[in-house]
Image (cartoon, rainbow, N blue to C red):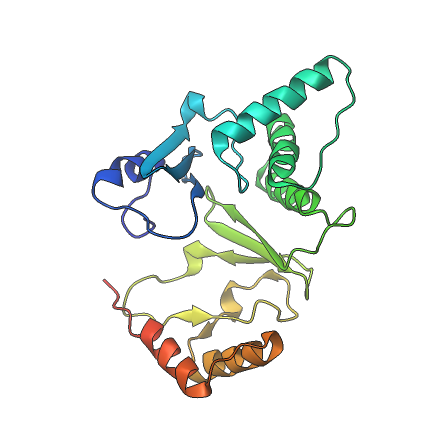
Length: 230
């Protein structure tokens, strides 16, 4: 989708020619024009919400219509002055995020990025007692910037996509997302190295107890490395 389309409407229209095949049933997409849409695959058909049908530009791990219904119900209870209890479930996270996003008044890109990280932290439960999120990422689609932080290194880092050369003639870039750096790290991206990739995969396998031999890892990494560039 990223390689073929630049607008939300094009992605929705592509359903007749390209069908996403994965274990994930729900997607939230956005483009540089500020348009968003939910894409879901329910009972073998694609269901999308965009424009006026997208009441909240939010998505969790629940069906969008069900999430919106629950959000409306909670909003009505608040209006009546009734006590509302929001848990850490998928629907609960949707309600939290929908409330925050709907109330947000944009004052600039940096404020939007900071608010996005704050919402991600809130719905993850990190401000209470939920399990910690391994990493968080925020895309500024208007300015072509990617911001992220990890549980190992909480400093926010930024990659400016406008500074990168995406042509097939330029080398693929990589970086350790836990490296102790901050700010604009675009110029610190390194040319792709099979050895660095392999060493990282071996260490990750040991840490998480994966039963994958070094030879199998090499074969898998080479497989991904041989994808053609067009």
